[in-house]
Structures are given as structure tokens and as C-alpha cells.
Amino acid sequence: MKIKQRVTTLLMFAAFCTNAHAEQMGPWNLDDLYKTPQWEKTDKAAKEGMTGILYSSIPYNGNPVQVFAYYSAPKGAVPEGGWPAVVCIHGGGGTAFDAWVKRWNDHGYAAISMDLEGHLPISKTGGDRRSRLSTDHPGPSRVGVFGDYAKPIEQQWYYHAVAQVVIANSLLRSFPEVNAEKIGVTGISWGGTLTSTTMGVDNRFKFAIPVYGCGFLPDSDGHQGESIKPGQQTDVVNTNFDGSAYFKNVSIPTLWVNGTNDNHFTMPITQQSSQTVQGPAILRFQLEMSHGHGSGWNPEEIYTFADSVVNEGTPLVQFDKPKVVGDQVSVTCTASTKIAKADLLYTTDSTSVWPDRKWRKTPATIQGTTIEAAIPENAVAVFFSATDERKRMTTSEFVMTQ
Image 1 (tube, one colour):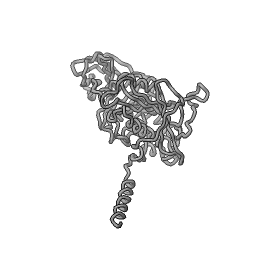
Image 2 (cartoon, helix red, strand yellow):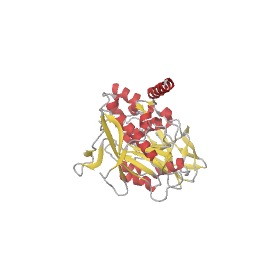
Image 3 (cartoon, one colour):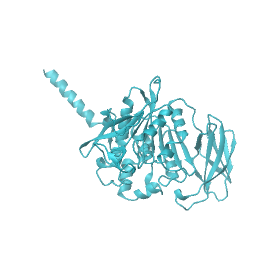
Image 4 (cartoon, one colour):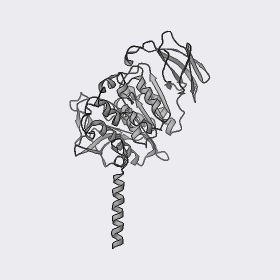
């Protein structure tokens, strides 16, 4: 009896120690988030070819939370080991998108897209996308740009959104048709910001593709940065939520997609984010890229990049840092397919905020693995783009010439 009591006491002590030393990443308890959540199928917001799901997330104000999501895997025989998969994170004004899931399905990936603001993808009025029906057990909704920063961390939207993304990964990994070792994450706008954070919190992802959104938000002269500055709000964001707090943990390949004139997320913070992660990073700065969900999931480079990481696909063109010598600029690149076209993009504007700077492009010369061009008169910043024979475009970093 004494032996049994001693064993019981030791087991209780071990359980206590395990709980006391739960793995913590920032404000998130990963031991809880890495568990497969309770979930159920739902006919609400039904879409052909999609499985509607309600899965449990962390409580909000002591109340249970359920997250709505669309999920689907590609049609046909499941490959050996299971389908590669991706978690899709919507941006501001967004929700669970069946079209996004289908796009990944068409490229050979299982995918899950969830609503991170406690809603169903059903409008109350039939037209207003920002007036959606709530789930029966909603979590918090976003309040502007970290407008709820003064609340306790556990009551802030971003805290819950990251948790719901990590739990979506845990759910996806539990499906027998999914290869748990080939799951990536991508997000658009606010979803890109959440991707930047989550990829450094959840080390189970194998690739990450932030679109528009990135880290170093308070340093930007775009809408996001101007909304966060200065003071306590900036401190809360930098300490707990901004991707830059977690980039040291990111060793997976990343693809950073943005435009030259994005009003919310500027080129410098996108580039700084790509430079700060520990794994290989590729940039894709598109000239005057529009900002939106469709624009954010349309580029074929996104799917080519994912294939290059988990499906042994042919990689995108990758660049070293451009070098400026006198009035010439050049860059060395690595290409697994023929480069069909190269351009130099440049701006002569050194005073406007980054979203307002006008960028132009001029043809560049391809010399084997080197691309070079003369620096246009009065150019203050330049970068190269290269399009391969598959019509996949990537870019170098921008460098200042003055």
C-alpha cells in the first residue's frame, strides 16, 4: 500500500511539474494549442465541395469559443504519406474563403480557411461583408489596429487569432489524408501579419508565405505603422505580437509577397522581415500591386514556392544582394530554369512616404547568372526583377544608390 501511495504521489508530482513547465511562446501555451481540438461538421454556410467545420479554441472571457472554417482536400487518390496542406489566414474584412481553399486544392493541397473574428461567412444583410452573422460561441473581433492593446493580453483579438491559427494547424494535422510533415501557412494583409507571427510561434510549419503583412509594423510609414505609434501601444505590439519578436525562431523557407506602393505594409519593413528570419527567404515586390484577398492569392509564384519546399518542385529564381559600383548595379542570382526577362525597378523620390513613391522599370541585361543595368539618372533606390520561362517572377532586395 505504501509503495502504491508513493508511486501515486510521484505521478502527481510529475504531472504538476509538467504542467508548471508547459511550453510557452510569448503569451501562448503551446501545450494546449498543439492538442487536436474538439470539432464538428456543420451545414451552416454550406458550399459545394467544402466541409464546414466548427472547432474549439481557447476561451474568451471565461466562455467557450468555436471557430468556423472551410476545409477540403484535392479530389482523387491520396498520395503516399498524405496530401501536403496549408492553413490560410484572411485579412481585414475577410472571413473563411471557400474559393481560397479550392485554389489550393487545384494545386494539389488540402487547405483550411477559418474566420478569426467569431463569424460565419454569411452577411446579415445579404450585401455588407463587414456585417456577418456570429457563431453561437464567438471569440473577439478585431478592434482597428491593435485598438484593444490596453486590455489584458487574454482579451485581445490578436492573442486569440494567433491561437486559432495554431489550433487550425493542430486540427489539419489530425486528418488521416493530410501529411502532417508537409503543412505550410499563408496569410493576406492582417493574415500576412499573423503569418509572420505564427510561423515563429508554431515550429511545425514547413513553409510560410506572408502576403502584404509582415513584421516591424511600428517602424513603417504606412497605415499600420502610423496607427500604432507611439508609446504603450507600440510596446505591447513589439513585445507580444509583432513578427519581429519571433523571427529568431523561423528557420523554414519563406516567400514575402508585396507591392511597391502598399498603403498598409511598406517595402522597407517587408524587406527587413525577410532579412531577419533565420531560414532562406525570397522576395516578390510587384510594381503597384493592388491590395486585396484575390490579388493576394492569385500569384502563381505562391504555389510554385510551396511545391519547391514540400513537393520537390523546381525553385523560384533567388537573388543575392545587388551591388552598386559607380553608375552600374548588378546582382547574382540562382535559377533552376531559364530566366526569360529581367528588369531594373527604380524610384527617384527620396522625400515621400514609401506608399507614395513612384516606381518605374527599365530592361536589364542577363549575363549568365548575373543581371546588370545602368542606374537611371537621379534614382535613389533600385531592385531587380527576374521572370523565368514558366512566367514566375521574383525580385532582389532594393538598395539605396544615394
